[in-house]
Length: 186
Ligand SMILES: Cc1cc2nc3c(=O)[nH]c(=O)nc-3n(C[C@H](O)[C@H](O)[C@H](O)COP(=O)(O)O)c2cc1C
Image (cartoon, rainbow, N blue to C red; front, side):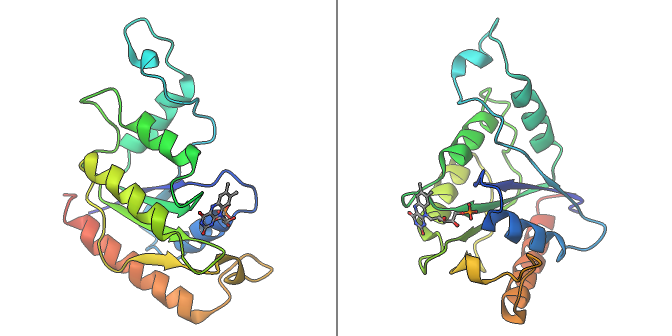
């Protein structure tokens, strides 16, 4: 059974919609599932030299890779920059993918939840991330696809979801993801 799930946010912005979505998702999981938000803002840009013998591996890489490895599953909450991944998220995927043969993410069942302030809902980043995760042998939930349009309108002043429709949709996403993820975890 899935017990530990890591949340990775593509946005570094304070007061981000990604954070509000993450906080909302946390409330939709059963109490016996531990959700951990994994920081990616302190990861230096990936340079393979760090992983070479004698290289100076940044402490944040070790912390981040260990945290990812501890998880049974991963949830990516992603905003789109210029129809693709934010640089911070692509960097986090690259850091987790190495050293070769000892990547931190491989095999962990994942959910991608994309959003935007417009109507396209981060479709581009959703599928661009899916492409990289497939290459890393990460099974990604196919359906329901999780796209949130006009994300800035979905929260009240308390930063909580302000409508039952979105809450019910996200609850369905969470339930379906847990059933999916449990297929990959003893
Ligand atoms: C550099 C940059 C590029 C962006 N490109 C897109 C884009 O291609 N598609 C889109 O829907 N929104 C785009 N946006 C808008 C963001 O998706 C929007 O600001 C979103 O709320 C950011 O997520 P956050 O609130 O979690 O930080 C862009 C924003 C920035 C700063």
